[in-house]
Image (cartoon, rainbow, N blue to C red; front, side, top):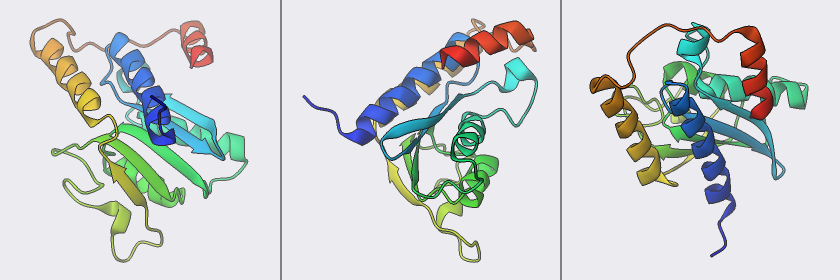
Length: 174
């Protein structure tokens, strides 16, 4: 069976989410696509880097902006395994990303419709089209497994910074 573009790119976001899981980060993965090419990839590294800004979406946006040579990501589509938080939803709106494909929703902190909908908020200068549920079950199962592992003590909450050489190796493998 041939995969749709949305399925193909969400599978890549899921691969990155699993990579985050493997380093004991909340398993969220993200890719940004422009004209059929992935121009930005990211997965959560908040704990590893000790930096609240290191969400999958922000990392992918940074890489995509470097590729485009601009802060505007018009014409791009973002694929993310979990509904974006307020910070990431705001960055998506500010970057003018016109379309976001979301794996599963985030009823506690999601800002693409769960807690609020920043993608269609009156007063903001940009609207974002969203598609929800592409590989939704897989994305949700991955999140649930991770937090079950945390609760069961398999992933103790620890602060561990990645040495710079290891960080560069991980980024080159993305």
